[in-house]
Length: 70
Image 1 (cartoon, rainbow, N blue to C red):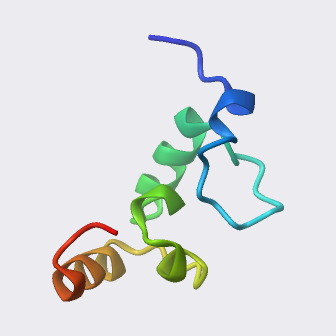
Image 2 (image 1 turned 90 degrees about the horizontal axis):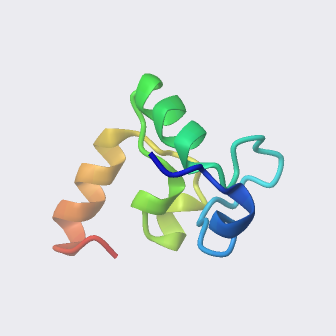
């Protein structure tokens, strides 16, 4: 497995939670959110991500309402 390089990932990280210690570290972020029954910020459109409701339920509702991921 390739090394998780947070500095490189920060350029495309969609997380707006500035104090997150996992920001840009996808190999830490994804398992963390999955354990919490959530998806990471990059799974949501920007307007939904800003609500910090990262639940799978919100993802499904958003996807169904918009008919697309973004």
